[in-house]
Amino acid sequence: MSTQVLDKHRAAVKRTRENLGNSRHLPGDFYTSTDIEALERTHIFGQEWLCVGRQEEFPEPGDYRTLDIAGEPIIICRSKSNAMRAFYNVCRHRGTQVVTGHGNRKNFICPYHAWTYDLDGQLRGAGYTEEIEGFRRSDFGLKALQIDSWGGFIFVNFDTECRPLLDSLGSFTEIFAPYRPEDCRMGFRIRVEYDSNWKAVAENFVDVYHLATLHADSFGTNQPLESYEFTTYPWGYTGRFKGLSPMTLDGIPRFGLMPWLSGDHLEYGYSAHLFPNMGFYARQDNIHWVSQWPIDVNRSVAELHIMFPAEFHERSDFKEKLADYEQCFNVVIEEDMAMISALQKGFASKGFEPGPLSRFEKGVHHVIQYNLDRIYGSSH
Image (tube, rainbow, N blue to C red):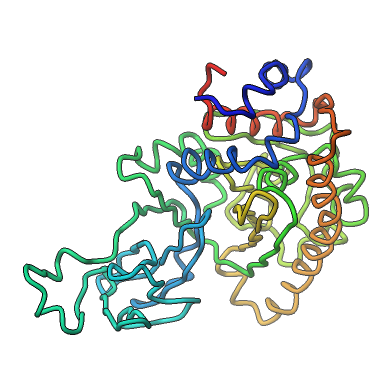
């Protein structure tokens, strides 16, 4: 597959494809081109398993949440049979979104012409359609997406012929099973919009090279660079480091440690990335994760989440102490915000020439290779 951007930068891409010690970052066009963005929407967000939430967000039948994934509106809901379902949020009559926001409903009623769908996506009501020759409600249900879960995380896939979720996750499930995410519950979600391409945001969250500089006042000193052990996998990468980094400003966990962890898991933490867009951080007291989504080529949104063992939520001081984690998150977001926006301005500048990658950018290098593989194939 070829584009004007690839044709223009073949030599630069070849250099980016080299081993980390000889590699260079990508030219700015890869972060500003609408042609590249279109390829990503098709070959990354249109074909990969994407984490969209947690099971505990949908405790009752009828609970739902709407999302926009790379321009596609979708609904996630729990059906009457207690199964999780995912649909395009697109009425089969004129294409209107049938529901917005989140909440609990017995059915979804399109606000335009009142076509009504049940929680399994079946069309149950459509006024005056009995007059239409050959019309059958069974032919006009909401179009479904593939949906599956692991560890309480909900994933969807737009590709009807995708491989099973567990095949895609690979050894990710084995590495992080000791943290027992299925026994954790979400504490909060923070949504942040950036004036930058989604890849710049994703790469920032896997870039440990900047921790000691940009995040020196928040959590950077809790993750010594020299202690990082990087490992790459077909599904992403892990950075294992020695020490506590619970995402509080003073580096002290507020609820103690996960009661089921033992051995090295009490001594080391993980910063990881699950392709295509999920930063995953397993610590001794919590798991937090970040999902990055494109809005357009120059804008993106990230959703940051944190969760703790369910028993921590039962403490009388949980909400009070949870606020310390949210404060740290907000400080980190503010520290990153200006730099991420500055990246996008730099990518668009005639003066930008890609620089070399540090050995602490192994995760960034691996993420870039994945993105190139997905939009061009491994031969380019």
